[in-house]
Image (cartoon, rainbow, N blue to C red; front, side, top):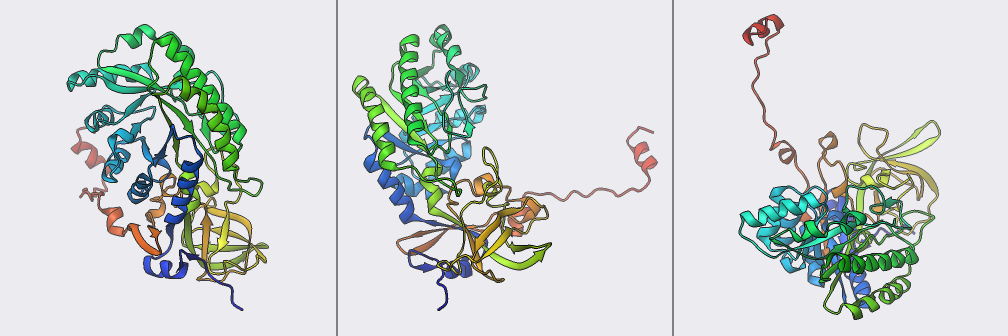
Length: 439
């Protein structure tokens, strides 16, 4: 009996590969809906879910999550434009990042978003000046705090240490006079983000309690009303053999217990959790085709048509130690793994390895190989232009119907912004120097 291939909502993966080519990303809308729905159903109703576009800035992914009720957390002018075109209400947008340009701040002002998250006192002054130039008053701002405490349970800490993110809590405690001098800005609350890929509910809950306590303390110290508090997010998904997904009931039970007394004390305060990886990772799969199977000094390699140029996190970036992401044969999805393969892409670099000695069924040229849980930080965190391969197609399957949500880069796409300059190839360097007056 032949092993069965993977189907996505009843659609054979081979049909998707034939229609859209490989490599490609395939997203499952049912999984996007399921993840959001389970979280929304269990999470305290006072906590709004915002989608962090940095994880997957595809406009259709953003629009679909927004249709389910998710707001948008943005970090660039293009992400802001993406969210607007996806139909997100500006009242459900926040914009953050340590290095916003004047153009980005002006775009936020023009869009009238819910809040600009300022990450330095200097940024506050720039924004105040821009608001005056454009005749705006009462511009809503959240202050991003770099807390006195470090987040536990993450390998990629973004607070509690010297960081480019946010304003040190101690600095904020002494900034009441400077904040009061701002005439066009209205500080409405605080933001803190401790890190990413948290997998232990106890750590997430502990961090949340500390963020809420600090927000209350700074509100009293600075005389700032608590209209909005962004408690961050960073909920992780398990990628590696020694990891497991957290129990959502345990997590939300702990978070709800932490949030409830804060909500009672501040009934008008909007709470936000910003999530990217958690909402999209499990809904995505990177599909690549085996070109060759070869032996080299006792190791068996599968050389595929896509690699780390599209799924760079699989090779190890940020806080990741090089371990294998979940990877499967999509052509023999239900077959037992019998061989050990090192799976590489087509790039001319030894680092283009997406799985090292991973167990798979026997692989033949033409087979489809999938990196699973690839719906977050795929194209958005990968060097897609390396070797001029370009970015792959992206397909979203909804109710059994595949939709092309990003076209594959073509050669013309990659060359369109380059300019061929007609330079005189003069081999006589001395003559060239004389022409430049530098004999």
